[in-house]
Image 1 (spheres, rainbow, N blue to C red):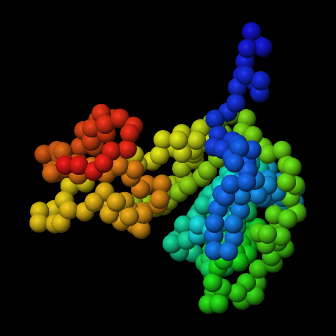
Image 2 (image 1 turned 90 degrees about the vertical axis):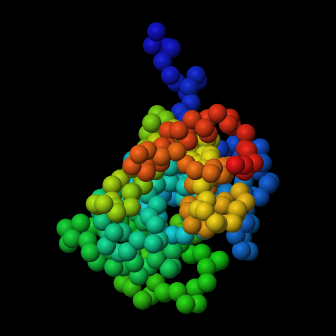
Length: 294
């Protein structure tokens, strides 16, 4: 019976990392990213992610289960790190660029981050965050993201701070092996991403997402349907208007795929929206993308 247990021959842990591998095989010559003057194909993106994952393990010495943080806007490096970090067996911790130095310092200490990638506009925050570390705690290794697409004319120079930068993002990546055998999860429940709550009511709390959880979220989407009730006397927006508003104000994965307008939303006697009623309505619509309606 031991031969019937899960193995590489009959079982594969659910993980979104296989998406990149397949995309490089099936759509290798198709464009994967366009950013200012930079254009990469899926094959190039896969090779770069493998190189970075290799360098993280062989050059930096990252081990399975280590936490790697990133403080950067949505630039190509951030995109690649979402694949490369878990490909090295590490756990990705992305930090919002809107946070102050005190909060960043708390997150880095609590997560026990071994390494942090930061773009040029975040260096002043990182410098202050590191200065808040207790003397007995070593800050994580810092690697500068040298983004050619950034407008660095008014940005802070790394020379303004006493950082000892051995590598930049690109110089580290170039030292990696593009044929690296990436670290596959032992189980689909292995941690892949570490996020933190906003900390509005208390200190930020860590939320760990597994390979399985991220895979299912990417397949299903986070916000398939949004119900909207307009205030009296307001003009009628379109479904596209609502989506565009959400794209500006919210993370893109939270933008609804379908918008349904209702004259009124179901509420309790105390005025709390009955989400379970809306959830059942959304289920009854099915998986097809619906046009907006009353």
